[in-house]
Image (tube, rainbow, N blue to C red):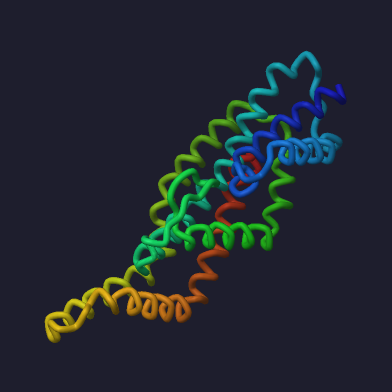
Length: 239
């Protein structure tokens, strides 16, 4: 019974670590994630309800699905921050400085990576790791818990674009105003080499806007971390 309980906890922990953002990326070796999953399973197996070896084949698929749903719920919330960071870079004229991000498997702007890192730090500072362990220590999933997890994932999918726009709105407005101003300047002084000053103007205006709106950005990042924790808890069936 002890081994069956450990295997059930290991299945949920492994699925969570392989689907969660940052640690679930290809940059983290699989051996590290497997070792972390085993450590988490050992820690939470003693507080989880015991699982009979006869019930393990029925319990294990639900545990894996629950772990995947919990990790993917956090990934969806962080996707809003990533998309917002990508939009910020595009509207600041940094599209030409994009690079191949092996974690995302596609071209990305550096501001996108920064947004993901900041969201991860905010999640940890607000106790996200502690809440994740609590979700992993909950009772085995049942049909109602999995159904609630699916509903929560659908809700988080609908919020990705909204969250991205909230992050990038100041930079988008600053970029639009700067482009309009440069257009008027080009009309007023046709001899002005607009392309030589456009990037500098965008970077200056965008950087100034980000500095001025830094408190709102921090508040939005904290809200993102809190939404990730709430989504994690709802998917886990605690709320």
